[in-house]
Image (tube, rainbow, N blue to C red; front, side, top):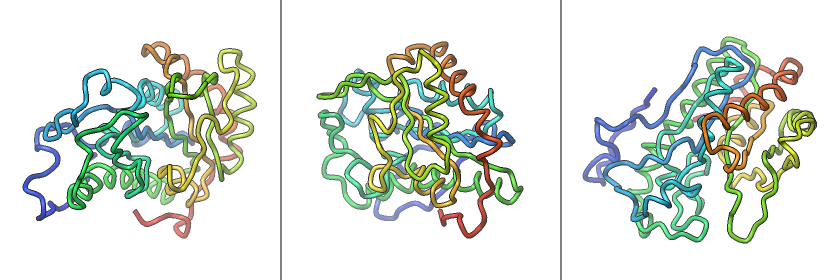
Length: 277
């Protein structure tokens, strides 16, 4: 699913060539499970026109460019729970699909202390092109999916799948998995308690290492909270996602923990709760 936006006359060429991969993927769009899944940092792909943004291969493979393993978890969870899933198609270094446009982390000049040469001194037109080409279609796809479920009266819970590095500079991160939440509609606390029954998940992070904020997050605040849908953002430590088999084990744990909670929590958004894309 790719949404097209008009070309910006201030820029000489589009960000993506016609033969490049799409800006997003919607997997299992007809899924009728209660969950809608998102994976905001699914890929470390770069538009050919931008090269590597001046970074080396090791940086592009690292957590600064994407959430390693998160897409594996999300895809498996989509199958296990018959859940629609929206995945971003390009690196968070080009534009972060989970950041409000204009905040410093949206197109980072540096990430985890690593300068990003290709993000220095961008014009407003260049920034706008990245927003329009990658961020806007991704979030519009999530909106379209949720609006369709509202029209069909399908009860819904939103779960965003992320991963985090175990060795962020200056921090100790002992949590194998974390649940990040704010206005969560009653999902987070019972989900944390169920995960704590699994020895492999201990200690479970509760809003650690991250919090949800209006300046640091987009998908949960805009897509879930404004619709008053139960929601959570899942973070899994990347050293537990070294292989697809590892990721599938975590997806199974998540499915076991969240599926009993869904019947009592899932709800249908009303049009008045649906934000304008």
